[in-house]
Length: 82
Image (cartoon, rainbow, N blue to C red; front, side, top):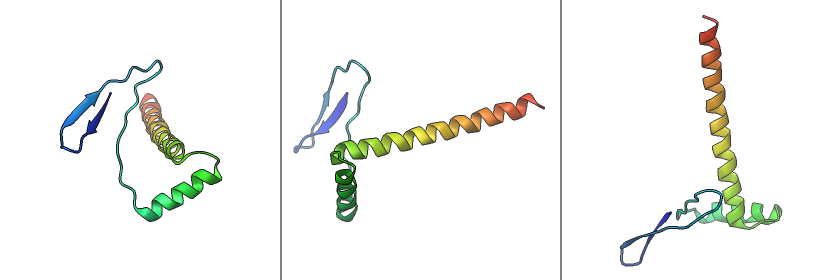
């Protein structure tokens, strides 16, 4: 499911049926210099800007998830030795 804002400021909710997972769409504002840098990095990586940004966001989210899981495991380990 994703939400699109029309030019008349009316909100429309669109449902998408996905076989694997629910995906979300969001419009983001990126400064022009950052946009140019990301575009060059995407081209250097042989991918589109959209795919490159998606890849970066997914990697960062997994890092956070892994870090938080590690902290939780350490906390549980410390409590089990008390």
